[in-house]
Amino acid sequence: MGSEGTSFFNTVEFRICDIPMTVDETIAIAALFQAICARIYMLRSKNLNYIQYSRALINENKWRASRYGLDGYLIDFGKEEEVNTRALIYELLDFVDPVIPHLGSRHRIDYVHKILENGTGADRQLAVFEESKDLTQVAKFISNSFLEGV
Image 1 (cartoon, rainbow, N blue to C red):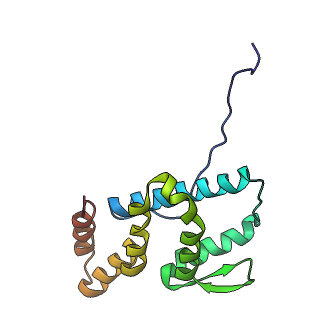
Image 2: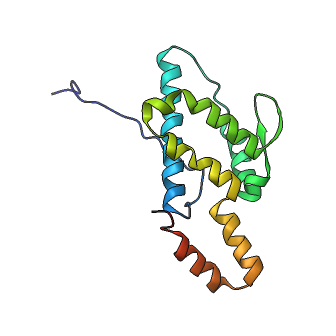
């Protein structure tokens, strides 16, 4: 028996963000990742291509994202300039928009806007710490926030 009838699927890993703080944020990010994959698949099935950038460039933006968060600037490789992180996220939302109706995840993707408005879990944790100067208060905040909205 050879490999006939056997399928091989490559693994896709998303290592772009840390653990989201709430269930709603986790679901929104998972829906966004699903939409990115669907959109790229759609382009590929229409024989359209996309630019693949080097790992070094991607790593630079990963570092910037982890260091500066939503208030920072990432490199827009196509424009060859720094761009506000939120602006790039809005571009990403526009990019995936054509596949959202098919996926039925509009309400989940729309939660990304709430993250952009209210900040990430890290932003909110830092705000609690700045106000209280107490890591116990931060831990309580995380615990109370985790299932919020569910």
